[in-house]
Image (cartoon, rainbow, N blue to C red):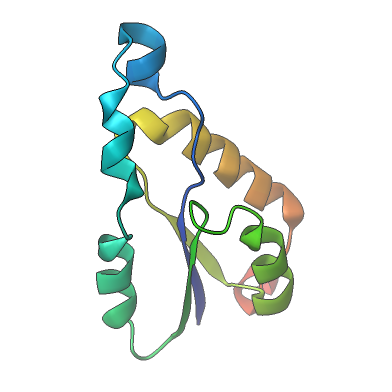
Amino acid sequence: MQILLLNPPDCGRSIPEERFGITSIKQIFRGEPLGLEELAGNLGDHSVRLVDLKADPGGLETELASFRPDIVGITGMTCEANTVRRLAEEIGRTGCFGSLAKR
């Protein structure tokens, strides 16, 4: 199975910023996506790619077209929920999934 794991892009203003004016929370999001790396490392029987959209905001389209994943996993913090939802909807509309989508 071909699995694509995504770390969402910077979402601009997060929910805590919009609602409560908390701006220091962005520092939390700047780290490496270790959770996705740990997950990918334990999927040895599958072909796994990880795309960090915070580091490469334009990398999704290319990866979807060339890799054609059977499944896409997206991580995110609660305050990134709106961005993650929009990203999932965008991926679903592309219809770019691999062999499992044909079953």
